[in-house]
Structure formats: C-alpha cells, structure tokens
Length: 105
Image (cartoon, rainbow, N blue to C red; front, side, top):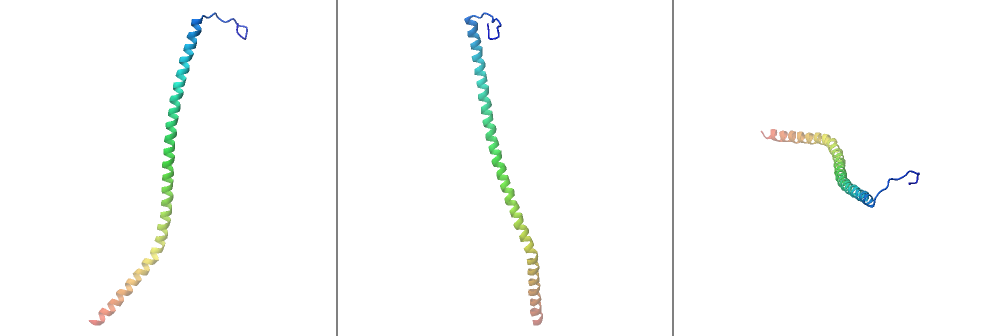
C-alpha cells in the first residue's frame, strides 16, 4: 500500500531494475540535452559579446565623425571670410602689378 491507501501492484526485482535502468537512460538523455543547451548558450554569449564590441566600435566611429564634422563646419565658417580676404589681396596685387606694368609702357 502506498501513502494514500491504494494497493500497489506487485513488482519483481527485475521490473524494479528495468525501471531504474529506464530512469538512468532518461537522466543521461536529459544531461546530454542540458550539456548541448549549455554549449549553445555559451556560443550565443560569445556572439553577443562580439556584436557588443562591434557596436561599441561603430558608436566610437560615429562619435569621432560627429566631432570631425564640427571641426569641418568651423573650418568652413573661417574659410569663407578668409577666401574673400585672399581674393581681395590677389586683386590688390594684380592692380598694383597692372599699375607698375602699365607705367613702363
């Protein structure tokens, strides 16, 4: 009888051993599946770490490019008036050369 008062079927030692063997086989299969799942999880974690590193590198690149564009924007703001000053200087030199060259003819 079991704890609930139900009558248990009579089993032989061979039947008990067969049940233990089946239980052992089942446990071994569960352990193999667990090992395979653990290995798969480890591989996924490695891939995620690699992707995280790639994303960090990409973010660093974009941050650097953002800074580079700021610098280029500043250079562009300075280059416009500087180009006008250089053109004015070139015009003055050309005018001066024309005056000096025109006086000798």
